[in-house]
Amino acid sequence: MAQIYLDAVLEPPRSLSPRGFNCVMLALGAVSFCAGLAFIVAGAYPIAGFMGLEILVLWLVFQASFRAQAARTYVRVTADAVVLRKVDGRGRERRASLSSYFARVELDRTASGPQALRLKASDRAYALGEFLTPRERESFARRLDQALAEARRERHEGQDQ
Image 1 (cartoon, rainbow, N blue to C red):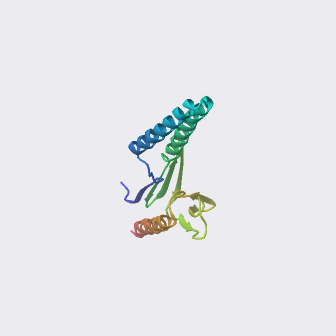
Image 2 (cartoon, rainbow, N blue to C red; image 1 turned 180 degrees about the vertical axis):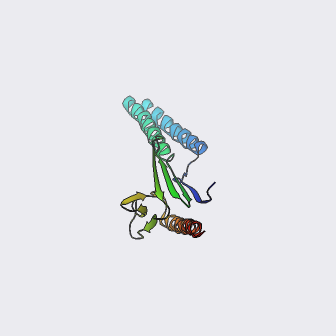
Image 3 (cartoon, helix red, strand yellow; image 1 turned 60 degrees about the vertical axis):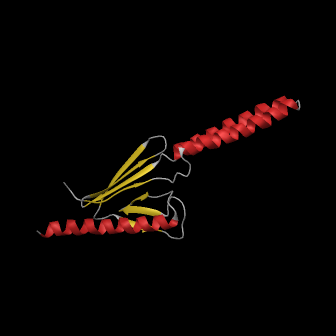
């Protein structure tokens, strides 16, 4: 079995737990309900319905955010290959395999967004760490570059024997 030099899972940060989400929605729902009652008492019935609609829209936005946070990027480096596997929030998967001998890491410190960190081999380039902070992106780029160097070294030593 080939030695694995890097086996990383990159995922977006999650700042709100499911329990925290329930607390936020309960608090907002309670405020909306109380305000809605006040509007009904004042005779402004339609406003209460719109307040309930606001809570529904907020819940839908949170659900979309949680779905996006389910995205993952898997990076595995061995002496033979770098295997990339990207899974989006809906579970759709894309895979790529590059020769670890020819793969190189490109980090553009001035760029932000999905093209700031790329793994390239010949004419193909794959964006990595779209949701990482600049410091995390730089740290991951160093670690990936180190893993590629170790993989090349093993591959080169294997050819000498």
